[in-house]
Image 1 (cartoon, rainbow, N blue to C red):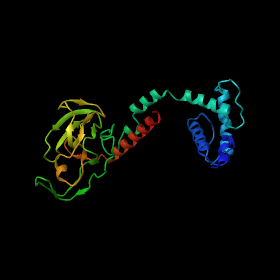
Image 2: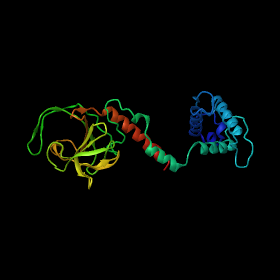
Image 3: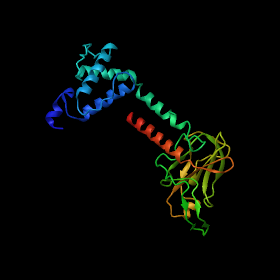
Image 4: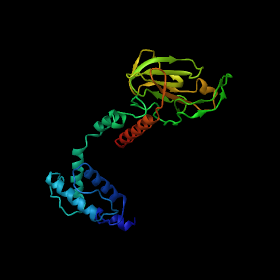
Length: 282
């Protein structure tokens, strides 16, 4: 956009600009909320669609007494000037709670996606590792390999998800549950690990840990998102070619492996939505 175009009032900028696009997005959000009637704006630049929608906004502001600080009337002319801008800001203050309340809402929110994951009976309400998303490798065929101590691991299907992150990265419980198994051994298949049993009987398992949370013991109740320990490279992970990672698995009461991929993808998607929304309010 040229300097000459940039000097024009917003409502005279016929060409597309970031400012006009931002206004159009805001107006479209009011349409989606049902505060303004009509179709969403699709044009580039401050054209007829935008002008008509601004008129509707101005009428709404006048009708509901969202006037400027000096109490001067807002003209219903489709021109988004200072008076309309002041009234619009007052409207949004009424629509939105305080930033502190918003942050708390998003941090504690249970999105509709979290209620009924389709691929597993366990509700994944918190991601196991906040810093990194999983490699969705459930069911992948693993070729035979030998560990550092000479143990030969035969070809098998991978019954879990691997989440690669540096040693020491925190690991969190994906849902509320009770600690039903802890292994502090750094050898064996899973190495240092924690298992939780959840209300519906399913178990979530966290393998190859470097450390387990101090004081955590069998029988303890944990909440979704509570720290269980940190990522490591213990067990067979130490002897494989893979870097430090968490092996996350879900099983039925009888030990049958369940594929958590779909539920985990949804959980990470929701987690990122929350994180972006909270960041916007910092």
